[in-house]
Image: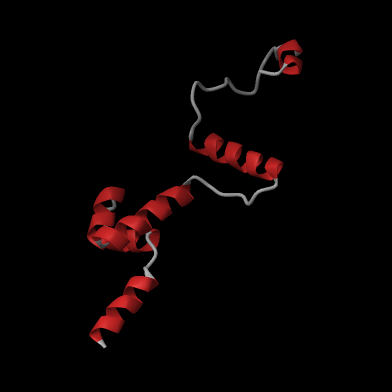
Length: 96
């Protein structure tokens, strides 16, 4: 806490009570604020999930990605994990 924050008078009736931990929305907003403040590209925590899903799909297949992500439908996992074009090119080079 900064000295100026410590010196402030507490609100008599805050709009909401602060939580003990970040929830999904507050975590996303905090990352967004920091990115803008530092002048770096804004990213969102869900991008980490998409990246992990793509890596798992690349290494272990779509069904493994579905299992790790906990999706009941395979189509949902296809949306989350991007198709690896490099693997497709390598396979086609081997097949002919």
